[in-house]
Image 1 (cartoon, rainbow, N blue to C red):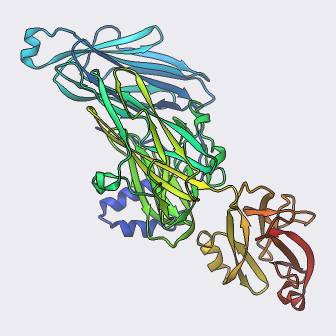
Image 2 (image 1 turned 90 degrees about the vertical axis):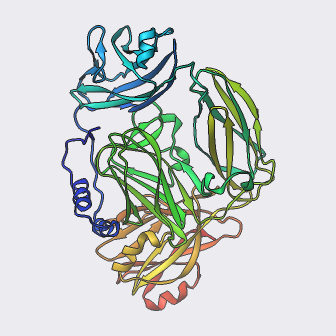
Length: 565
């Protein structure tokens, strides 16, 4: 199978290949990439997008047929012309090419396989089975035929267009008898997000029988001793990047619940609601706290190299190419200092779809017996789709992160689904530590020292202490506390007023929010005072009404910046 690369200026992938051919070690590669910085790219001209790029049609027995569908989209502003041709070695029964035009609306192709009900004796003796393939668009189709042996087959449909060439792979299994049952679960990981102690919440698991015979299944929540530990996923805080609202829109947008932890650069596409790094140097950043992190993605025939940075330092890379689309987990780092970090993912070629991440280091708990109820626990599925309801009782849970494994056993295989959630009590206000660093008259206040290690080091700052605490985003009665930086004076300025609250921001660069601050006194809060040194042009913030003696060093009092813990 030939691997396809997109034609563009390539820097990072070429370096990677040269390093691999030169026999350089992983550590040598890491050292060379540690100095690289991501850059942005945008889509230009007509671009053909095909989803999915890999289809498993399941098993096909005598007299059966199986169907899969493809979505073709044009993400450019210019009309796109495309043509589809059949797999190599298949005999065309009619015309051998199907074509279409893409504007703003998508096209939907169907891949339809059929087998004969009664095989001829001569065919059975040769152990070859006649299979017909139809590629269908609305009322138009192209048909092909091929005699194939029993077993698994993988074929390619080539799509050529003015917006690029795409290869679509489809897999199917020929069986001599009617197809056996085959279990397929919609999600292997389920992120319930942050849930308050409000009683009960519920989610559904989708179960599908990809075979023909009846699938009999049973759902259990086993104790660890009921299964081999190696078969159970490693506990951690799983976070899904799925945004249901952008499915089938073509463009990925960050969901409301993730807007404080995810940021992107470039124009990320979406695949089934997940972010897809399509252009070279597309960037996705994720803020997390812990000692390690794993990235979940899908490898595919057009996948490239995914570069991973932690706190702006290159750490690891993953080759996301595979002959067929499949889920993959990429352990980026472990053994990190326990605390806040920033993961940066950079696409260096092809495309990569990111499912989510799992972080380690936080105390992840297992709930008490009965905290998750399964309805129904057993069932039988023929060709329809069934759903299993998970009902979670959060009233009996303490605040913190929880992880559970739901096992689905059947006569068509077994699946393990991870369930992750965080419980937040209504009466607990989440707070963020703020550390102060100083260099003479210059002061830096940060909630994420590891992510700003370079800024601290090159700025000549020394650590002083934990000075106060801010609130997490969404805390009632609080708002964003913004930071600006003046490279001429080296001063950092902070305010909850986006316009500066009357302060002249000429020469300052906006750096975003470092947390939330209360604008009026809340329970157990205190004033954060602001002082300013006119001769040095630098600000100083403290909860000490006397300014920690700053008046003797030329600072004058400017008022209350807000209320903190």
